[in-house]
Length: 329
Image 1 (spheres, rainbow, N blue to C red):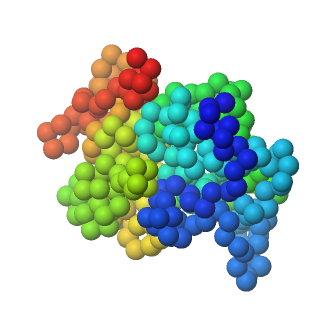
Image 2: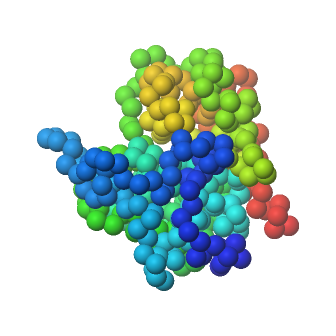
């Protein structure tokens, strides 16, 4: 177990779910310790959403983590989730946390929440063509979204993360579609997604937090807003590089604390702009960009291998997990 993990294994629940720190975003990103509202609909558990609608699930409050050995493992998993590069440095090659894409410490609906992921695995994934157990799914997150390398299935990091997810999913039904699972699936945009329109949306709504060049933002030496492209972002194999995933996430959750401000067209446009920039190479790269596109990206949802503004995306990508390779040399 990493030293940082050992030090924080018994730490209390974090108050910052990691796309932004509390210092940068206040309570905008949600606090894992938020007390329940007056409405019974906000109480932890399963809630009927009405005829023809999937049930809603509200995960338990962080304040209800048990004060025992199991609870220590839950808290450790939460800390890894919120501070992934610091807590799992051997496996993370960029500056993203798990909570960069799974907001509110993995609690928020329509942000691929962890309570929803836990109850649907094992599951077949077209991405790798076989049934994945939860551990393999998490390994893929480290390899692609974190631009790192996969921990062994029995690594303490994996045990802690799965324990945290198990606890979040307490009382959630298995084999049932729940409201807010994954990212929203949007219909095609009214107009084809456009780089120029997306650039304008990014400048107006996104650059303040994520930087004019998508480089992310630090505060007091800590990353508080993630990089959206470049060497510190997710690589070309990550799910967020797919336009549909990015547009759904953006529409449901961005700008931070102002979800609903953008139109669906704007979400598609800014997703296109964001993913029309270089990022670390797909770790599955073989032979050439063209061959890699044909095998893994041959569809309208991926810009990898396409020429945009005179540049073939993927042709100038840093190697996958380059930061880890550099540190290990």
